[in-house]
Image (cartoon, rainbow, N blue to C red; front, side, top):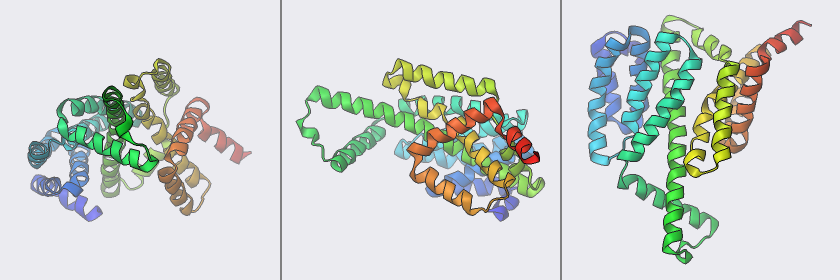
Length: 292
């Protein structure tokens, strides 16, 4: 991974070559996005624009063939976030922008996805019915259409959340590459210090509560996406805590296993940790306790 980033940063041709090759291979899209973000972080948006434009060619061809708007949204959105991080040097603002970019991307995806996404929603409903032993044939036409529309809305909400998490992952990989190549230890320090301000944390929580209070699926669909900055901040706090307590790396391995397989439980727990840290500055309190 480091060798790939180092090769891409030798010059514009190398960066374009690596990014285009990776963008042409469906399973390596994420590497292309990370390379583009790295170029923007290191050399600026002007240089990164060349790499982005060339990389978008195979992605747009894939979009024309399959109708999948996810990759183009991820490419453009991640590039914008990388520019913002380079300009502001603030992960807080970048996470706020991440929510906005993912929400807009979800709405664009909804407009252009067409029948491909509808077929996926139908397949998901069929698999769900089979898993729970429910017979969709007993539903009336109106009930079936309403059920399909609700599932479509929820899936679009999870798509927005997935896009947000993915774009953060691409940007974090690019920032880690930049740290390894030019500023050893810088990325770890940034992640350990990532803490949402009380104003941002309260604003995010307020939006979540408003969506839940309104209660319609059109608003509830945004709750998973709105919680992404809180969950990321909570995960960063766990990383800091493990380092501060000089705990074994196996703790982080176990933590991520639980985060993946028990997401419904740990997702709100991480959000609560982030809120508590924002309001009470847990890092400061833990340091004071250790000094005492």
